[in-house]
Length: 553
Image (tube, rainbow, N blue to C red; front, side, top):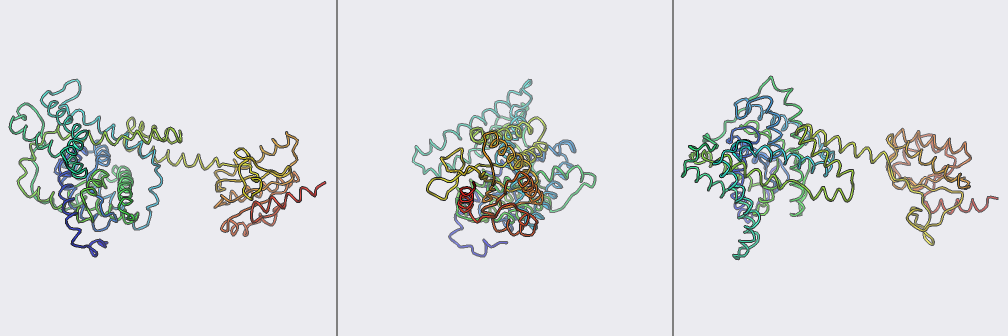
């Protein structure tokens, strides 16, 4: 905790200050837009950007992670609250804080119990599918605010503001860096300026609302923003614990996954190491801080963290500075903020969210592994058609189902010796020497209750195929070089295989058994009943059985 502060050096300050200012400018419109996405008043997004960032700085392990509101978790919060409280109501604020509290407690406890390995239960394609589906949902949900009404009843002044803002943001994203580079600005500076395009667009849109009095024409604006520090209090609804539990757990899961992704990618660039369990503690503390300060669920933002890094952040002090600047904004008169037009805010949500649609992973998975591609598409469809919570659950189930399906079908290769060497390879892939009465099988997976039946069936089918070809089998060698675990079911299966082979006058041998596996086999009855031998190497088995075969009349 605060190890970075103990070793802080003055030369790091300039980078932290510049990054803190730039991220604060980026966070100001984002936090209000994501609060509205969560069905909350815009000011609650500002509240969620202050204490959570400071709390993460105390416990987190990433030096450049920017913690605050994010589109996906805001959508999940809004979806969960939609059936429980009217959008923007006092009850919705209470329930959003309660969800952050549950998520924070769960994350903090997982960190204390060192459960960071649980992040591995959602594969990258499934995570990509969830983000893509959520991005489509978010975009669809912002069409009406962008146009001032449904497609069948567009409000023209609002549509002009929204579409103009969207076009300006797209042009800045597409051409601004190139244009600034042509003017002689360094690429890093040009990229930084382009990141602040949403701030410029919102300032212009707000000025247009004020000068042209667009509210008189029906353009919706943010409205009054309370000034001052958020009240530190914990408001709870005793009647909603059960309704919030599952959504909050899913939000906690997504908080960790998205934050871990951002932290790991930036840590690799900086040559640092992310401590997974410290990340859980930091994210838990951030959400607890959000719960007591009028905020909602927060997480590490990939886009803001990347800006924080690019702007020169060296330590979490950059995020603390950003939080301090947001607090300053709340202390000064906030009348100007109240004129922010909702169509322009919707534009600032739509464009970055559309950029989160991950077609590259889909293309790669389609070429490399169709089952992963199918899981990605199914997860996306589940989010869009069934809902966010159901989409997360479907993603986890698909990840586990894919893992179980693959592990239940281990690769089993009939192997032989490459001529003139002691290397053994698959007979279907290489030109190898084999022994006529010996069947050598390499099992490329652990043996456990989910796959031993497949191994047994495969062995029997191979023996039948050899018999049909007129080949007599006297020895079966199971090469265990890839087996790191044999559970009790696997042990009983090996005992049964040994008995079955003995009844057919076939000896079962083992080779290249790993030490931990051998330690457990020595405590069983298998080795005492084994019809054949345990060979140290496959080459030794090949020589020994080859000599034995040659001596057989």
